Amino acid sequence: MQHRRVIIVHPGGPEILKVIEEPIPEPKHHEVRVKVLAAGVARADILMRSGQYPGAVPGYPYTPGYDIAGVVDDLGEGTSKFPKGMSVVALTEVGGYAEFVCLPEDDLVPVPNDLDPAEVVSLALNHLTAYQMLYRFANVQPGELVLLHAAASGVGTAQILLGKLAGLTMFGTVSKRKHDIVKELGATPIDYQREDFVECVLDSTKDGVDAVFDPVGGSHLWRSFRTLRKKGRLVAYGEMAITGAQKPKRSENLLHHYLPRLLNYFPGRRTVKWYEVFDENRAHSDWYHHDLATLIALLQESKIKPVIAERLPLEEASRAHELIEASAVSGKIVLILNQ
Ligand SMILES: NC(=O)c1ccc[n+]([C@@H]2O[C@H](COP(=O)([O-])OP(=O)(O)OC[C@H]3O[C@@H](n4cnc5c(N)ncnc54)[C@H](OP(=O)(O)O)[C@@H]3O)[C@@H](O)[C@H]2O)c1
Image (cartoon, rainbow, N blue to C red; front, side):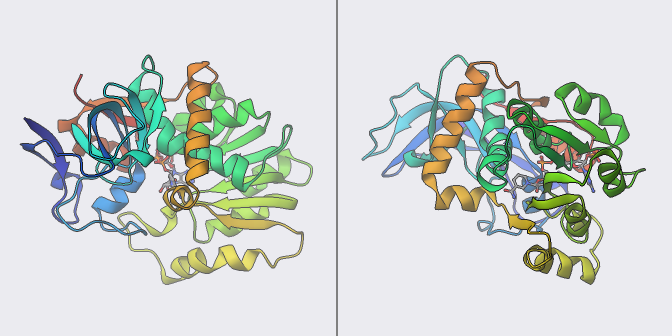
């Protein structure tokens, strides 16, 4: 039986994503083959494609795709946890843009069969990142004030949904055209392209916020840090300042790598931590299973409604990358397969 998957053979622009057809993969020992129904598209995939990903990337050719939702299709030897036909979700880091994928059974989390695979897949990267930064890194408490950057992004929209459940008051930096969605979700938008977000936050609060989440990095970390009140927490989790089409200044690179550590020595007992979803969940598989199960329960109880920006077929993976690179969407882009 044949299946289709996207491959990358060398770094480049969106046009290098190619769909190939080949025999479906066979599950090895302790692996399960999953028929993919929804594959997430993320900014991290774009960093990988363009050769800017900070983590390790497999040898070429490889298939991108950080997260998948689907059903168990076949079982390798030594597997025991999942029957065929069960719905599952997984954080894969690579490999998701494919009709079938073989994964270690320990990487799969069971999902009730009646949920929308596009909403389910948005839990594995975006909501898991948002949840763990809020609860495991910043330890947010009801009534706290929080600043989120990229508030209409995949992660940002998930943070607002979860932050509302946590009883937080949230400010979110976002371009003007996306203010309505951020307001509707429950945060106060700040137009970071026209306003100074540090001034806005300090003017609107008594002495700053309790926590700030920064996916931009570089010198932006210093500005985020300045919005914190005493004992405030900064969680850094991205590198938009030093990636993209333009080569970053050397000073931005240096600040990106050294500021998180240095800021911890500033007076005011404020803390700075770096969060990386794949590393954290490989290091703490108990977090991975527990936190994804918590998010699945929230989805099943309709306590969260993930924001799906676009549902596209596999052949439109290049267009999905173009849309993300143009910052044209709010929420998560999902590739729909086998439906
Ligand atoms: N460390 C981790 O484990 C982890 C996990 C997931 C994601 N991330 C990182 O988190 C970030 C968001 O990822 P995503 O997939 O959710 O992104 P996304 O959906 O592609 O959205 C990114 C959005 O950020 C906004 N933006 C760009 N520059 C900004 C700035 N200086 N200030 C505020 N907003 C800005 C843009 O929207 P507007 O300008 O239109 O508002 C853009 O659409 C990326 O840097 C990604 O690499 C890290």
